[in-house]
Image (tube, rainbow, N blue to C red; front, side, top):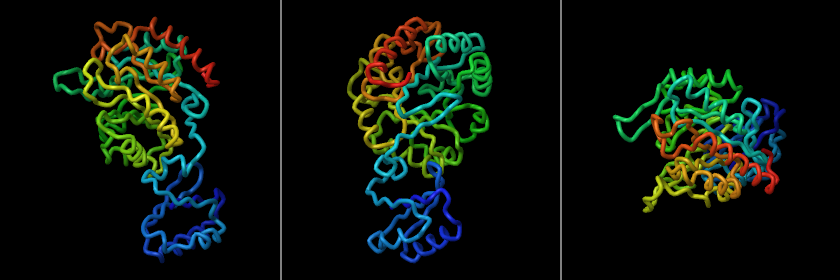
Length: 336
């Protein structure tokens, strides 16, 4: 059961409510969510008379749900969550594009790409500084130096930045990063998710390659339950028997997630396909399927990229893609 309290609820009345609920041998957790305090009650709810709960003046609404992801559920929070980042509105009727290289390689590289994608209409700049790689011998990123170079690109273009965190110990380096990305490998790193729940910084959470949609939402729940309501979901493909693409982009997950949750839903056609030649078509498909945005890898010299050059499109291809995305958004009535 979720009890949403009024924004002007009296502290004494709230205390009385919690004391009354505790009589029924149920667990009670409080969190700040969507502008008000929310009380999550779990246990044998049949003991509790809902009509009596409503008699407390501090109660705005009560929802009894079977969803295990209570804070992520659209059933409990029917209105779309809109997250504001550096002047960019993510979610609602907005379509946003995140673009940039897989890895930050140098000041010249990230600044050149940043200026290029901004000129084409990208809203947010991505760039990996800490890189979790399958092979221990692959490029692992410039780490804190990469974050510094992202800041330089932000100063140059004014674009908000997003970068991936790989473990809790790196959190201090992300103090001024606008959006923290949790990659597919860390989708079920629950201790990391709990820690990010204590921040109020937007978190872009990617679906694991072998995880179900419900598991994906439960991972988001870890962050939401900690009080951080600024969560963006990102579909990035799941592992199947197909070997002509890196993963299989689960287009069906986009409209499903939009029905199940109020959180913004993005898609990453670059990591899903691993092939630059089909990234534009997949990005358009994601837009048409109802995504709130896409994340696309763009590199000015993909052949010599330090990582994931095969899935990175060039600035010219990206510029053409953005024109087509704008056309699709116009048909759908989305703000772009």
